Image 1: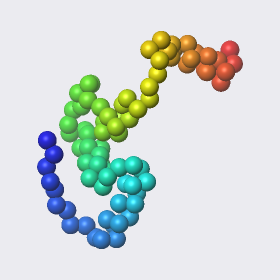
Image 2: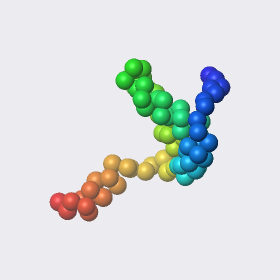
Image 3: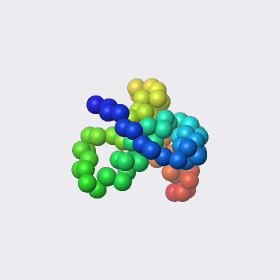
Length: 84
């Protein structure tokens, strides 16, 4: 459930933060929420099934064939990189 929060912050700081958030593809609200999550992470135990907001946004954006063998591709790429 989302709840509205009112903050008093210097205008210049808000402008820079908005530009930063836009550059990261986030809203200012998401940026602040993610920061609060980061600094309070030690106090709130994460469930193993809980995804971060950034991962939630990325989930499902890449479509792959059902028969894709990612382990084989990973093995081949690692062999190219490390050569054994």
